[in-house]
Length: 105
Picture (cartoon, rainbow, N blue to C red):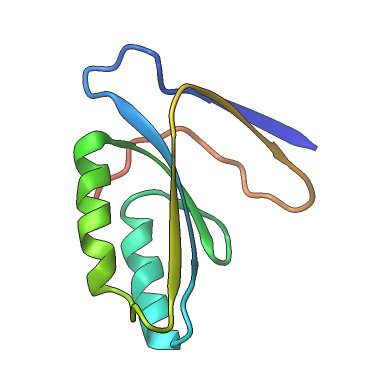
């Protein structure tokens, strides 16, 4: 078992949001394109889940890009915006998660 913590109430020059993006995309091509786009915002924590610590402006950009990446009739995307203090408890095989700045390509 491993834990990691975050606190979005800390003073940052650019306030950050902790965001969890989970998705179920039917088509392989759309799914791969979606995952590549999400890599620009955060890091993959499971096959269909990404975590990101991003600014409010990047969050708004993320929300605006998603409709163009999915089929609204077949796919499902959920984005959880979490503020304040948080904790994630990990079990099993997990990659080491590092707090790093993300660059969008």
